[in-house]
Length: 393
Image (tube, rainbow, N blue to C red):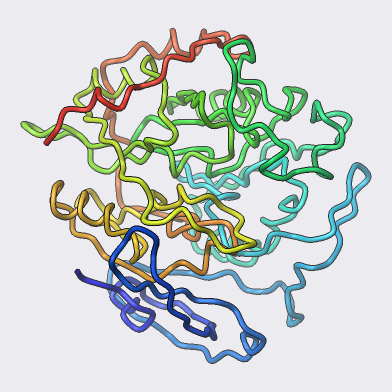
């Protein structure tokens, strides 16, 4: 099994400064006969040495501080509408920034502790702005995040834990979450792009107003709403993963999470356009670190370099066997368990600033006008794709 460790990341990047100091411990994965490397942060993590990694074709950038002062994510946030005792950090740029063509969009996140997160990327954004006269830079109206204005439950942020906040819907809920429709709100990771079509997940971080804003702002693109009846949690990139577009004589491949099945009606767009839905394997383990900010479903949080090469976490052997042995992908494995503590996987910690590609129509057989006329505020379809629907290889 090819494996990419910290030293071998040089095969992917051209000019990246890596500052890390880790302590390795070894645990055995549940249900897997393998030893995994689990990285953890220790008290000496602040003492770092810079290393420059080089590689052709991929230019990797990292955010830097706006000043010489150390970034302080433990500082309290205070706005006229809310307070937060901590901030999220810089682990997951994919959650808050997205590139749509020549436009960079800062997501209007409704999450209190991520409210100012894009500020820490401003130096990087301005450097791109200075280098490219074609870059456009947008941010939707910044939400107030007022508990009384934007949320049905005004105490939500005081009791936001997995055992108290519903993560699934019933047939009468119309996919309502605690986030209401008063203001525009979505995270960038609630969006997944496949050429001209962008898929948008209705979730506790993304409301209907968000997709309405995107449709009005980018009329040359098509924004498709995705509903997951069994999961109202944030973000799309562990639920629906387009891997390879259709070619002459070969169907496209889209990976779907068997713990989070999509609607039959919404997956019809894929099957009508020669895409083959494939159920992703269960994670190698559902055991998480005690303070992990993500679920075990992050095993499908992979980074696609192109339509034949992907990067996955090194312990996810079931996923490796599916992608490499059965589907013929080149698979690079990378030790990344440490990110469980910070809320993401390999896809989360990256942001595609620019890819050499064009706005291809991978879904020509569709009625987008009818899609835009759907009454999203009263959407009631809950018929999920059944696991047995997939045809075996």
